[in-house]
Length: 168
Image (cartoon, rainbow, N blue to C red; front, top):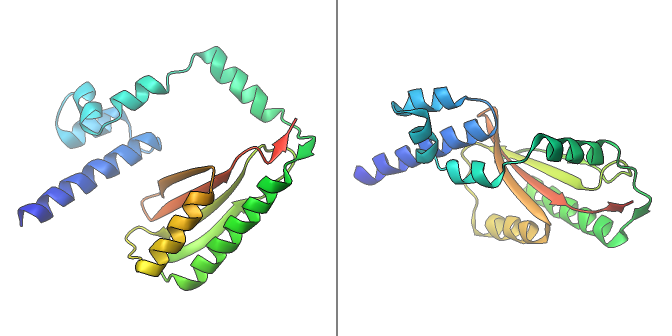
């Protein structure tokens, strides 16, 4: 029974962390849920170190925004475009094989975005067999960046990014 209780506590902490990082709940809400001070709450869900590493000045944020908003690629990297298609084909096959997958979406490679992204939405509680796990792991290894997040608490989103498809 203790193992089940510990697992539930970890799931609750992970849920609070993801909700906080996604901007769905505030620091005060986290502190209220954990019945402690705000600084202690952030430390308990493990985001204090993350906040220190992601501290940008307003000028740096503005520069990043302008660079992204005004991007207009001149040359496509065909190896990256091929990689995007490989990942998409693998995810399509995974979608057909796994019953817990809800949908597959994409931000296709285009000259106004440096990166291309594929989003795989899976039920919030999903069980993968050995073959499905191997397929998903192989796809993850191909991506330049991989992010796991929640979407409104109803499902888990795996985001596969292929970076620098276009260059200036």
